[in-house]
Image (cartoon, rainbow over all chains, first blue to last red; front, side):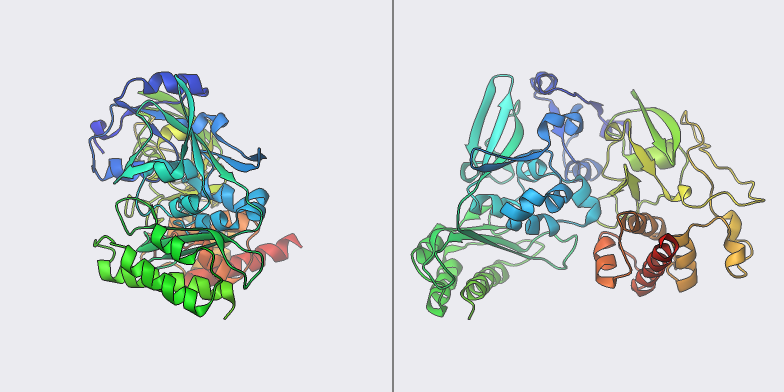
Length: 287
Length: 195
């Protein structure tokens, strides 16, 4: 590597130092590096002249429950999510998604906050966060604000985060009786970038009872992770019967206008997304 | 340039480099520890796997600024120096560093006459040799380090668990079967020696 691809880095231990460094828009943050190091090595973009290494900011670590929500520090790694007793108990779908990302080496460095801010349409945790009504606590030297997941990814690889802001924590509300399901379709189980990734959540009063508060979110099918609202409406208030599954799958196939790229075709994604949804409803209905 | 201090195979090192230099380049270029290989350079293949504070990481994806104060373990640290091995143990490159490797580990391979000739290799390395877990060898250092993280975390001989542990390491020669057998063998022996 030549020198220009190896920017200097500062490694603050306190948030206010990081905020001060980010006041210069030419300075960009790095968390676990699993996306940014690839971009730098591949020369996909002009390297920033200076980098703020967030790894020493212990304020961005830890998984806690407070105020009826699970709060995860932005630097929480996928390995930490998999190992967290709290996540296993309250957010098994997030644990499942974390286990589907890369393999051990990536899970040991990749962070939940990095997945969110990197804003790839294929980010595997992003549909889960949409389906769970997550919100993101963001901070800067001007103060903090909370942005709901559904208004965070505004365009292809663009977020609502300002250049001088950092993602601090992810809050996921606990909901009694909420069921969640996750499925990733890739070329192989490990290390693959998703062709389709789907997360579903709903509440029910029992296995064959009608679903309420249905959320269906998908990744790798559009410029951003999305919610499939027409399909959610087709599922809302209905029990998980074969008729419901047929109708929901049909609605989803009509609602999606997936991307066509090197990993998959539009048509494949449309069919697979509908079929995966059908299967998740069938599994939930036990038929 | 910034000065970063950390340990490699328990030896203290100090390098003066840009903070975003890859740990892989610091190991290979600045510290002359070329046991760690570069495969894809984008976190897909695992050839550059090293342990960072005990966890398997791709050294191509870790900037050195995130290694400051940490402990790095590379393949050079697996084998102990065997008698008669006069090879260099430390970095010979331009980096200001002090003896990061314990041994090259190749000294014992001269006479492959049974396990007696493998003195100094660690249990995983011996198991790889016995089962034929290495062919061209490019993936081997990374495989060994990923397997080490797995065994150190208490992993056993279960093949599915081993497959998951090395899912981030690609091998184009072996078809994986011999590698999985090697790790299972080492796990079984380790469990036996502990009990």
